[in-house]
Length: 247
Image 1: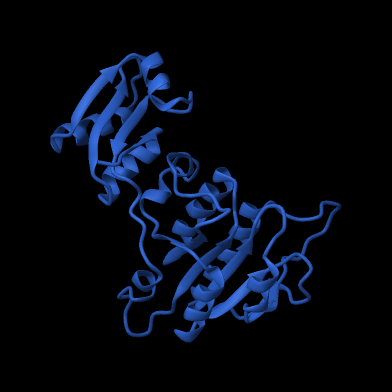
Image 2: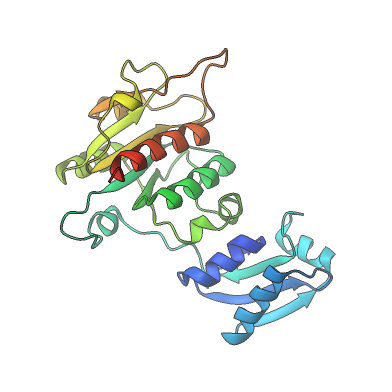
């Protein structure tokens, strides 16, 4: 039986709320008291999940980090989905697809921050390559404030083939690149769309860029070369969100 340890109040609470993982045990720091810890305890007791109140140092030793906030949980592995699962979602007759693709985002903190925003704007699913990319670990769940427990995430072998599949299903694929001539604010993001962002060091790979329908940039002033990838992702997703919800 494969398991992993979630840690932090939000990841544990959201795993319990989402109901996508099986929660085997909940561990609480008996020296910490808060409303949210009490909420975790109440839910665990209601559902008959085995709960342990343990010393603070033992919680740290269990999850190997001080960022546990007094809560941890033994859970089943993260439930990955497929691209077909995302695109076949029943969103109503006139619904438009809204997908995010991440080309080699390697920092778990960045991935978590991006997923948190993706959930806020209603992204259907997040697509990441299996190789050279951060995976949906407990650290990512912690960085996303538990948003990972609700988002649907796909790991694919070939991102280019996934882009081609999405295009065949009627999605326009927009890549975000610092030196692109077209501003994101001049692009039409109101239809079925997949937004592609590149990794922290090299951006979008050339073959991935070649298969995008168009590239856009985020205008900026000042002396810095570019935005952090999670900040750029937030700008892009919220511009699409604004256009898609104008009414």
